[in-house]
Image 1 (cartoon, one colour):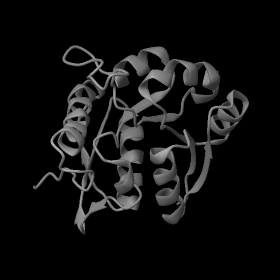
Image 2 (image 1 turned 90 degrees about the vertical axis):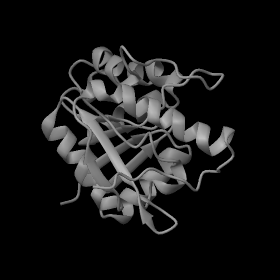
Image 3 (image 1 turned 180 degrees about the vertical axis):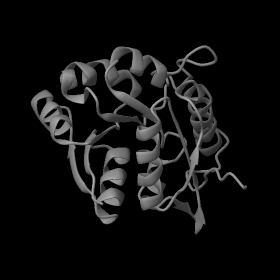
Image 4 (image 1 turned 135 degrees about the horizontal axis):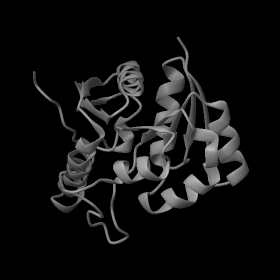
Length: 193
């Protein structure tokens, strides 16, 4: 069944998600920074993806207002500072802080451990990647696990939203491996089970 998906952010991540989810048969609208368009898209959507830089979350939440109340909000961000350091960790996560700020939304952490160019197919070099999904909202988490499978991922329930602390750390490690250790972005994580 097709889902109405709103993607806030038109960078590499937003474009890849839009491409893959549309290919999978979902109705997708993506918008950039225009506050009116952001709010309108969120009001229309059943699931809202936040594909914006971590530092833009507060402005994005102001634009969204109550349009996300009761909706599944997928936090795709990596909680990094402007100088590419981990912004939070161990005692909280960007996703947990997002849930506090958008208290009536159903926040799900997912996709942040995958480089953008692999989000539309869920694969690297023909190998299926694991999509780790954390949330306190069981129905929202199940919906995002399903969207991940639609894209081609091996979707994995990563537990409650507090586990976003580890997903955000893993996302940071992925970036370090790809760019600091110079393995490049054609890498990804797979849970063998």
